[in-house]
View (cartoon, rainbow, N blue to C red):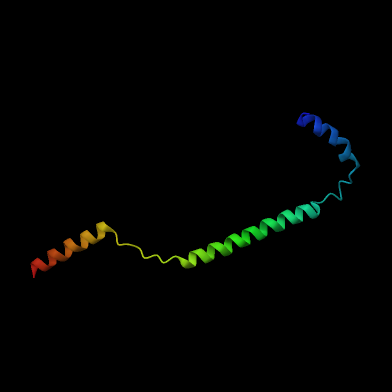
Length: 78
């Protein structure tokens, strides 16, 4: 059975529905609530993992070399 045949079989059912009363229903709410709970759990987990990070940035090698050169130059002038 093709998808177009399945859709044409469902078209008469759509005429019976009141177009002013069609809502997502309970299933739509359950899916939305599950997605919201999943996002909340992921954010909670991310905050916990980010709290464990102990990050100290290493100095830039170019800046260290420039400071060493500048420091050596000023020491030689004294």
